[in-house]
Image (cartoon, rainbow, N blue to C red; front, side, top):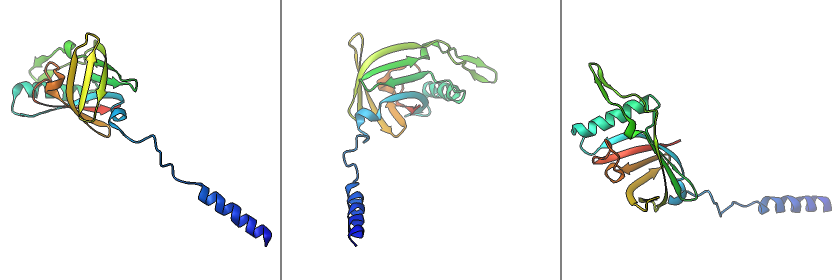
Length: 165
């Protein structure tokens, strides 16, 4: 009987000593939601009837379909940002069958620092130029105001959609 009481006590202590970790450090905050690498995959125009906007959207859609990503951002946990863009090296060729846009082999790389408060991404480049962009993140999808980003051919009213990879 004494052994049964001791065994019951030991089992009870073991069962009740295991508790949930209520101080989780894996909670998603704006600061850590943006950390990682993101690539532009889609351009959603505010005015889908604009030919200028449709050209940029078509270029991005075609390149993305070929697994060519011309705009990528890597947000590091130390608040540094590395951006790569092949936009300046796009060669757009009109052919009888439509647009032909080969994947650029060159990319420009820029480094900066950033802050993100959940709605506004603020970057400061090495020359001290500050850029503020409206951004929203939902899981592995980030949308950014295209006008704020000011990327040639992708700077009309609308959103650039990025996927985390």
